[in-house]
Length: 625
Image (tube, rainbow, N blue to C red):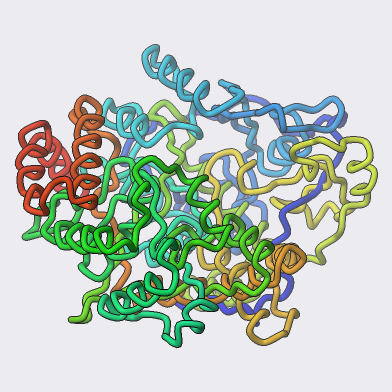
């Protein structure tokens, strides 16, 4: 798939928008629901061209109106879809409106012939999950399940409560096809992995920028490295030499920052041995493929090599001797006070602890260094599947195809100003956008909203615009801000388009040409510069490095092979196995146990549930192929 380029953007996505006030009543040509066949896996989401007249506005036999270019127009008579939704205390609506009745839902009913009913409204995700479990038990799930966890989606699918989406995706509108194709490419084919049950897809992932869930970095103090007359290390031997020089100069300093979770510190070394660490919120661990089967990453020989090196570093004083009792906040204090050479963390660490450190130590400079390679060239980093939030359609839904038609319409309208996307869909999918390029308007009441609601969490929802009626659509509604997370049905961003915000920021920093910035990119660019100029400098290097890894350069980035939910044995014995791992790793690093005790840990892991977990994971793997 052709990569979208920043310079081809005309005006890029706006995250706010437009329509008539909530006091208005949408017009419709009827309120009954047309007869339809029960949903099953043999139904497809497309209507044959034989069913549709070539004249604009003709209706198919299923009551769906298309135009002459095969754009979905509306259902006539209207249909009703139900869903679950989370409305927190920070959500706000215009007077007389709520989550079910607002400019956005009115527009969908009037213009698309799709009426939404909120079957379950919850204040938070936990409450929503509880309601969905009760609905599952009473066989009363909504048409579209929006807030289910990965484990719930798997459970619902296995019980036959959800429809498989494969054929609907195959026959989806072009914007949906590109949404899928683009995300599959950007996730190394893992896009649907979390939601695949018995080789069928049961949820549409909510996609976004790919770097946010992946990018970690070894933040290194380049001012100190320069002071030591050394270079940023590339190999494990280079790292040995740098840490030795640093410890000699600063014997009380922390060569590698590490807290009691250990994984941030271990990650600095693990890449050089190809060890797939279970870091950064990977609740079920990383799993690697060996001889066609999946094996748990933390019991592999590569991890033993990594721990041996960490034990060596600890013995030499390169690691805080009190790391085992320190949490992340305490480690951040060490960084801010200038007592750390290398800190491994997510890219957002440019905010904390890096910005406080730069403010505290004006001469300090930092680089997001490439991952350390082994002396033999080995270098790999394993990360969890990108997108693990998804939305499903239940087996009782009478119009599953409607969810795909509306998703396509939303993607078309929301991204109408991304010219390169328009070109790609024309060239590769023979698709002309339904919505024209539209001048992005500023809200006419932003100052008043800020004055009237100084503490509101989502003020954008109250902005009012003045778009002509013929230009309205998702992202361009006059009195409701249709951000992606507000969409009913399926939601998400084209991954490549979402990445453009970050790409444009990196390019603007390197070239000084701010005209390449997307609207969202410009907002962040301005804010970051105002916070500290080192933020953009450091981020640009991190982004460029990860962008190349996402494109497959050096084959360094590997994807966690297990993307399923928590298995029964994980639920039963996972806490004990986690404790066993943490205690063994800590004892090896601190030297209270020999490195060879790792072998006993592996035996104990298998004997205390690991064998069963491995079978459950491989059963999932076999079924997901």
